[in-house]
Image (tube, rainbow, N blue to C red; front, side):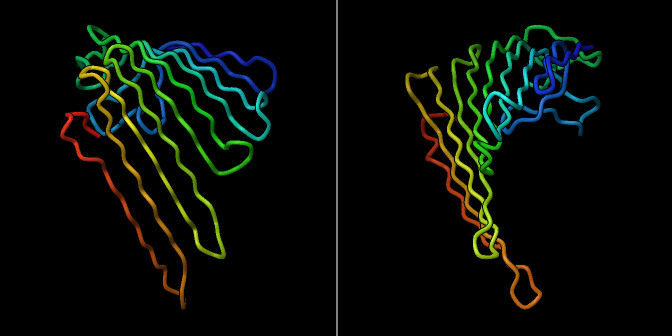
Length: 171
């Protein structure tokens, strides 16, 4: 259960068990039951013009790897994570996320954007995970894509690259 409160016309606070939808912390619904998060989430759509600011304190989850239980109980799975996100940075189609996961002693960054240039849709994603568990190990990934139509046919091209994972920081 959770409680949601609106503060003015542009701010919403939700506290309690809830689904989340960010690139690296998200709810999956394909299992016997959805994984959910015990979190406090603030969403503001007016503090930064033409942007949505999201701040969250994620306490725990019932997701696999954090002791999922058939009854959905939260046990032995404290995440102690913080999330800050800016969607639609200054009205541009850019989204930026920063994660600080205290329990895992790691942080992560995700930036994505989609633009139309001369009839071609260009997409880009950059992500990085920093693990303090074994000093300063970092993994990163980049993805680029382009989609356009030529003679009634849709053409798509993509490129991706992931850093060498010798350090054990999985992506």
